[in-house]
Length: 166
Image 1 (tube, rainbow, N blue to C red):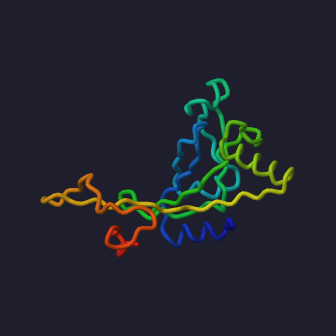
Image 2: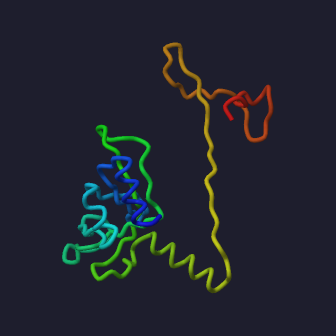
Image 3: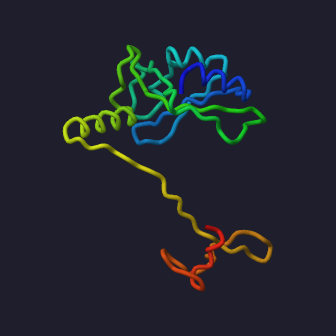
């Protein structure tokens, strides 16, 4: 998505905060939240944050790090926080000089995907697969751990009672 399109959408949807998401070295999601007034600057220059506060990133002496939003990851979250609309970017983690932080899982993945493409011609494709379980409720309407049926993959009625849900 282009910067202008993002800024227009943010204005149109009355977005008030932007979450700049990244992951730590164990791929646990983290975020820095900024007011929408700082969005244009964040898109152009990134946002500084204290990398020493993220376990495994850097020592206190090298604490300055940069989050650079990836415009292609922008989305508006489908829920509000105290009535305020929130947007979200996934970010690249950079060193203060703009070079990639070698401990950023996103950077590592991009680097390795490029390597296997360049060396072997492989292209990585992925997609979600939604799975779920149905549970019964007790007499008071509270959820239980009793499953809706005893069906499994590829079963039909009468064993698979979840047909209407799919």
